[in-house]
Length: 145
Image (cartoon, rainbow, N blue to C red):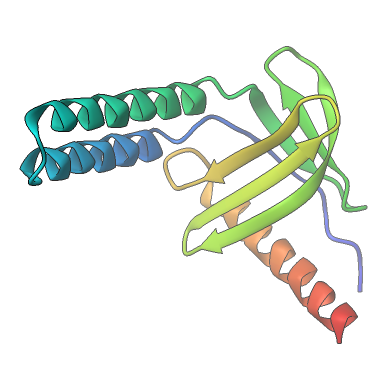
């Protein structure tokens, strides 16, 4: 088999994912408020949900990754907002329909999760990633057999 071409893409956090997080947090607060709890417990739990949601949305919005690349030799490179290029390894991945979730590990900055969705990435990039990840997964399963 010929080697797969390199895949490179710019990365920005998905605005749709932030809206989904806010919606889930709103539903969680509503569930707490409608529950049969003492009023002060309802307020405390609602505040905890809101703080957790704000922290999650901020963490997503402040992603230090600005681009990623997957070379033909299966090596990954992350381009950070600080203009550093860091080698990375693919820790895990999930493909959920049109979404591609990558977990990339660097020695210097730990693990980074990149969610590629229709609102933050090109359909062709996601298609090429899905095809190459499927090849990687099939090679992994045949090596285990």
